[in-house]
Image 1: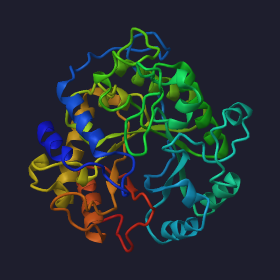
Image 2 (image 1 turned 60 degrees about the vertical axis):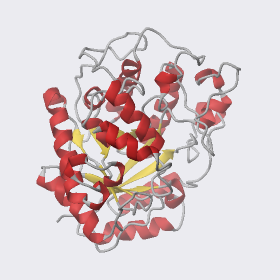
Image 3 (image 1 turned 90 degrees about the vertical axis):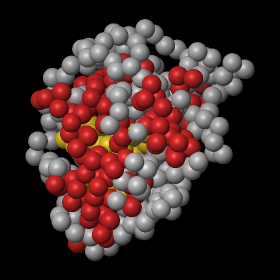
Length: 395
């Protein structure tokens, strides 16, 4: 099945404007990683860098009175601009009750002035959200559960300012992924990188966010092909251990502040073995977070997944299959299982051969598939934050 995914995705190029988080080349490589990775043995971790051990978790949910989240993605520009009013009306008029706001974005910019002198000194802040207290007050007024999105290891801004925290080519230049607008990553082995992102997360918690959602918690796609040629700091840990221990450490740091920790992860990662190449293990990450957010957009699955000729054109079938795989994947971790809150598709994937236009019916079919599997929470992705009207979010 992974080869079917890769073969179709290779000819399609980038995902496009409706999903900047995940490009098809990333999915191709991650699928290849997953196919060829050896499943890592279970273990325990102290959460300290260099311990070389995996995570066994004694966690508690600091937001036990949190609502069952039904939310949408909101860019920092929407949060700081006129679209905020439109999204608040959507919250008021529907069963939706949460927003995921970019606090550290896909480039690596912190999107509002935190007032933290250490973060301000990094010169990585842009004043996209001009008045964070006002935003939080507005969310509270509309009874909206606030979630802060922090893009972790994809961080072009920090990599350019501090190449020693990133990956260096043999010729001494900063590595990037070679896209038209190139991205760079910072090194998940570096404790400085961990602490920088956790500082941002602590400021978000101080601002009033109830949950910290980490995205891009991984090495660059295809990293195993260049790992031996790049210059970067590393130790005896595997890439899976380094990534897992960051998540473990982040939860230890943030849980006492009363905020949940969640992680975004490739949706199909629940259907394949661990991806050593990019350092992601679905089970190990899941047991270290309060909420796991698999990105199970139907457009990201190719011919044959879950028996669908065109998964994008079969939203119920695709989400039903993805939900079942997710639940099965998490069975072994028992009491450490987090809340499952998938990302769903509220955009039309016009780059997919055989795609269908997504509207009210298609969004409701995805939600219905989750509900039929006992999954009550979800998040909707639309990159420009224009969500389908008149959807019944409790079908």
